Picture 1: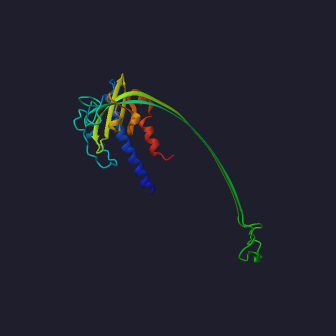
Picture 2: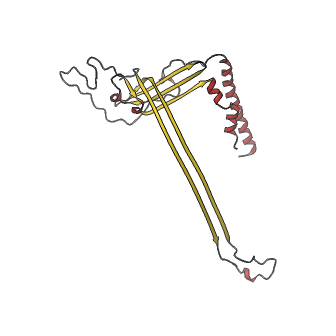
Picture 3: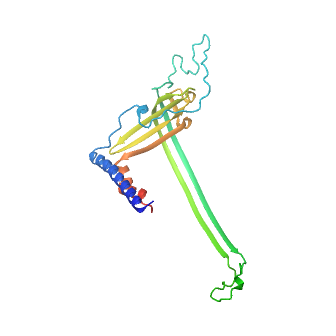
Length: 249
């Protein structure tokens, strides 16, 4: 890649970063003195990045009913099953996450190699009589190498999150499993916390009170974060973030 092309690419990336940051800066100026706005309630299936979940499905089995029975298979209520079972139904996800991880790795690698060919002359070099062209005394091929690497890493993490969030059934798979997605926003003063949860649940795992534990959700996606004054202060300035991405050193 030529120097001119590299300079043009750097200039283009800088311009894009400035334009993007300029929009975010204007948005930030609009919210001066005001708390961050809440997102409008919307249909998650209409989001630009929404994609229906496709998973391997078994052969559909026709439903069977017991003759002369007032109970429907899978029901837990005499008159009607109150658990979520179709698109648009709501169920509560109980988030009780308490993860603790501690890892410590240490690597020490050392290697040394010595090569001595023992060759003192070749191709008639011993017949050269001129002192200026005579080969050097001793072996002609001799190499030495020494490699040493020391690495130490440690991880000590503890995460705890206990809360409940309501999710909406957005899709029913052919085998009866349901795709759910829920979002919760809590604004306190000038800081807003967001909680997102999504995944695939089995109707059998839903409790009689229409709740389900996070540990029973397949392909679970849980995001907990926020935005506002404190979040902006904790992040480095946009110019520093752009410089860390563009600069090669």
